[in-house]
Length: 113
Length: 111
Image 1 (cartoon, each protein chain N blue to C red):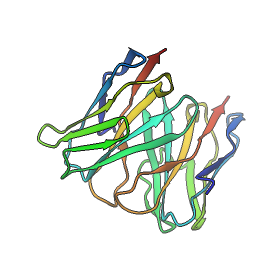
Image 2 (image 1 turned 90 degrees about the horizontal axis):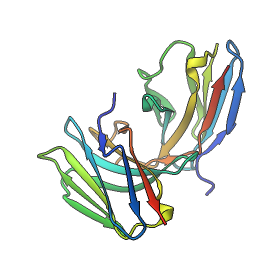
Image 3 (image 1 turned 45 degrees about the vertical axis):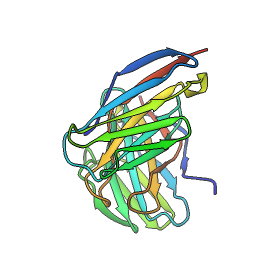
C-alpha cells in the first residue's frame, strides 16, 4: 500500500492563476480530509468527505476554494484565482473508519507570488 | 479554531532523557490522538486513546488522559535524536466528526 499520495509536492504560481492539488486515498478508506497548515494558524480543516460526499466545507476560506471527490480514491482541491495569502502546505488525509487514526499525505507546499 | 493546545511550545532535551508533552482541550471528546510531524513531511499517527481510557502504551510512548481536567500527556521514554519532530494532539467530539489539531510541541533531542 503506497499510502496517501499528493501531487504536486511543490507548486509556485503567480497571483490570479488557478491551482489544482490532487490526492489519492488509500484503498478502502472512506473518509477524506483536506487540511491547510501555516505557522500562524497551525492545521486548519478545510473540508471533509465521507463516502465521496462532502460533509462539511465550512472551513473553506472563500468561494475561490472548491473541492471534489469524483470517485472513492481521488480528490482535488482547486483555488481559483489564487492569492499570496493562500501560500501554505496543504495536506489530505484519509481514514478507514470511525475511531481510526488518519493517514496523511506528504503535503503540497503552495507558494503564490 | 484549535481545540487542543500543547504545552510546552518547544522542548529541548538530551538523548536518553524522557520527554513529556501536555495537551489541554476545551470540550468533551470522543477520543484523543497524538501525531508526529518531521520537518517537511506529513503527520504520522502515533496513538489513539478513547475517552473512557486513562492510559495507553505503545513502545516507548505512554499517553494519559484525564477527562475531568480535559488534559492529556505524551511521554517519550529514553529519547533518541530521531524523535526530533513536532508533536500534535488532536481531538474529535464524536466518531464521525473530523479531528481538530493543536499547534504542536517542537521537540529537539540533542545527541
